[in-house]
Image 1 (cartoon, helix red, strand yellow):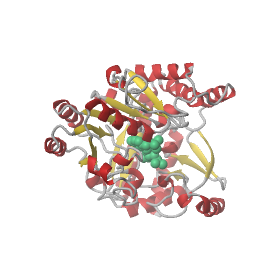
Image 2 (tube, helix red, strand yellow):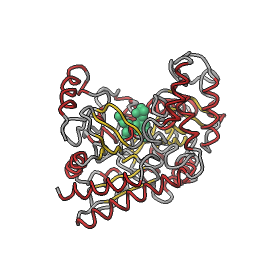
Image 3 (cartoon, protein in one colour):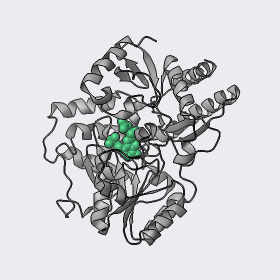
Length: 426
Ligand code: KE4
């Protein structure tokens, strides 16, 4: 597969952007080689600048749950743009979008839109500190919540891939206020809460983790976090930037039945445009300016084009049967991949949730960052490159999720399984 144009563009890009990219996760640091440059996508397909078509399981890291260039989303965005792209003033579209999220996500009564998942989690932390008057935060090793200083400690996603447990430039005071626990280990949370009695403002968790690769909450883990945070008077923050409107229309909190105090959203709710959001009960959100004293603002927050794309996306997802079909596609892919590896005698562990999966090159169950990090990243890298050569674009890191869309067809699953088979023989 010729990628001459991609390679040329990457050389040009490295002269004018750090590492040639606008986000480290795109740089292929974990798998080696030069990243592919893409120029168009439709449905489950994506085309690179050399004209090669691939089946896409990155899907912009989650937003493209309806597949790329969904006609309803594109038409909504174009219509909104023609009416003006930004006013910096309230619009009906924001009310319509807010209503949809409030109606869908059980724990949210009031919501504030921002422009990224990072802004959502950053604001959620500030809100928790404002509400409790406390400063410390508990997060989980391997959890990634965007590049907010306080959360760039033992993070997952691109940081885990690059072996940077904490970023340079983070104020030592931030790191000191961030306590790190182990995912699925309630005892580690209990002990941190007890040794920091009355000082923890919130526990932030991905209720279904996607940044260690996909890792599911053990039975009772989320319920346990809910009990411990109630007991210690701190807030529980669900970072549903990946899982929101993906694992279920109401997010992991609706499918798993555990209600957080604050929910962070992003990705899907923007339909491919820059959107994040944080929401909670009306009482908690009354802390947020201009109602309360917790300040947070944004020039393009609630942008009308992004709201229109988000509304169109949620309206498509609200149709009957969408999540049953997405779960079915996920299961067909995960079961098929399991069988191909088993027939090849190659041990892998596959974790899945509706619309998400990860193939860990390992023979031990993956339940946290420690067990994820035992995986053979080099083997994943070789597999990644073979799959690209066989027409399938996977996340360029062992510590990311494969994102499955409603546009992935039975034909895509068949060709993907054939590509896996050919990749293992190579
Ligand atoms: P953004 O600021 O990238 O919109 O969202 C940050 C974020 C917050 N919370 C969770 C659970 C997330 O997964 C993310 C971002 N996800 C990564 C991929 N794992 C985005 C890809 C990238 O950083 O380029």
